[in-house]
Length: 350
Image (cartoon, rainbow, N blue to C red; front, side, top):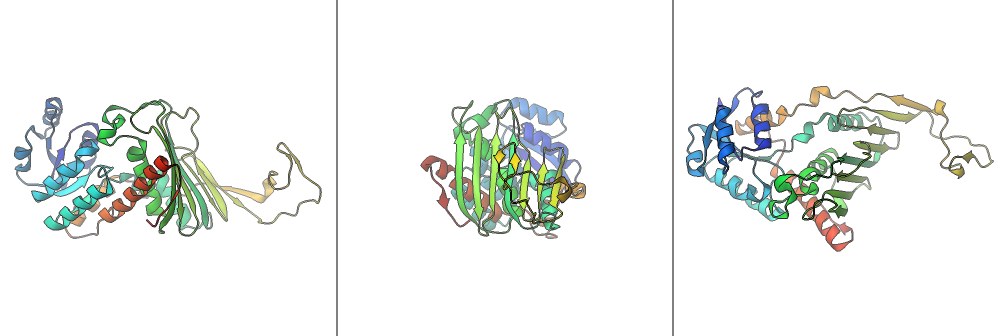
């Protein structure tokens, strides 16, 4: 049985602890925290609770370490774990900058350990549905993808509301949505433009919109908002053969395809609610087909992430979430921050 220790036994760490219980061959055995209440909470959950890092490193048989602290402590703690010979899983965002991530990646190579980032939302059901729909050609060639998460409460809680800790929605949720898009579209990103707002949270963004152009010309947008009182669909994807909508994380939605591409319009102007227009006139219902979303329940399993990390450490599988992939995500986010600050889009090759 392989043993894992957790640094920072807060809310996310408690979630990790419960989820890892489902993994055969891996168990959480120890936890370290600077907060005595969280150390007691770990002990109440049956873990060896430590208030000393030096004692934590010496926990017998511990091979893996999960770093689940505020973001500004990730690099220091991850590298310290690597120095002690531990395989490292780091919560997202993995670091405060691309330079920090490069140091962490170099340390992992130097000490010969597995190093990965908890990009668990690659296994979200809604994302897997989009991935499967594109792979099956249900939409044809995609030309625009919109991915968004909208909340209504306008609240950014705890350390995530502070710049020094690496807070804000681009780093908190945007990192997931960008990672999904880069995993979905096997092309370089060639342009980035971003708009960020601090509506209710002065220090960090509580709304972000990032536009990305891929090398083929495909346009993708991620949007994260904490104060959107009328949420928009989770996914909206258009291809040259159909459109896909997923309304929410419950995965209600549909695919709409055309039975025929060209329509023979009458030569007269068509009167519509938008006024006289043929271009934007509603399409006749008999020319459209509505299809259910493909089923992706078999792929929607967050525990697949941990199973892969365990297999990678044992040399049985290649790592699915690599430091190089994390570096691409960070490069897009840094280009997004720069775009917002400069008020312009940036040509890139990421």
